[in-house]
Length: 236
Image 1 (cartoon, rainbow, N blue to C red):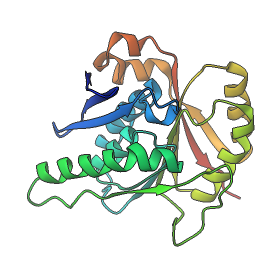
Image 2 (tube, helix red, strand yellow; image 1 turned 90 degrees about the horizontal axis):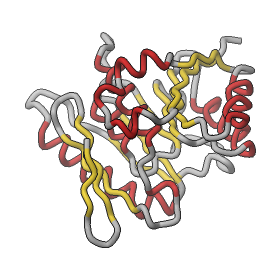
Image 3 (cartoon, rainbow, N blue to C red; image 1 turned 180 degrees about the horizontal axis):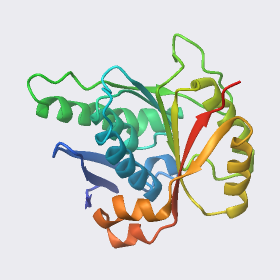
Image 4 (tube, rainbow, N blue to C red; image 1 turned 90 degrees about the vertical axis):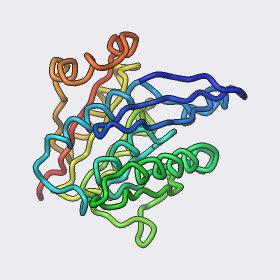
């Protein structure tokens, strides 16, 4: 994994996926929009999900995934590379200015390098502001088998909207993974406690993350306080 500098303030982040292909993710670090930068929580969660799905015995080709707050698209593209039918979402500015191009280019790479008998990789980009929008068909088709998000909760006013959104997207069989950096412990704890009203919440142990992931990442990332939570909707 490394970052390449380009002209016009763009950076390219390279991420090696399990089949040996390299995802090439464009960033715009000077855009004043946090959705155009790849954050450490996205890198760590992408690495963890790749490990988790690679060890799964279930076929993923008929499974649907949606990512909230996709940003540059790293995590959603990793989910797509594992065979999931993936929908990547973000606000219009991010979706139009960086996410669509990243998905289009990397889908082309993935499909060029797939094995002859493999299914085509499938991903699409949709504009979604989950703080104001209800997720209705045909634009969105819940329930999704996997729901992923990173660094979506960084202030208290987002918590209610996020939980409402994942509640609409999921059923009792859905797997929900939220990665975050513990920048504000009060916000994080409030979020986790609020989730427990409707979801079973499990924190992935730090020791497990370090064993699986951090040994393969740069030292500056391994020192970041990234946490991953797995949520499952409670049965009523």
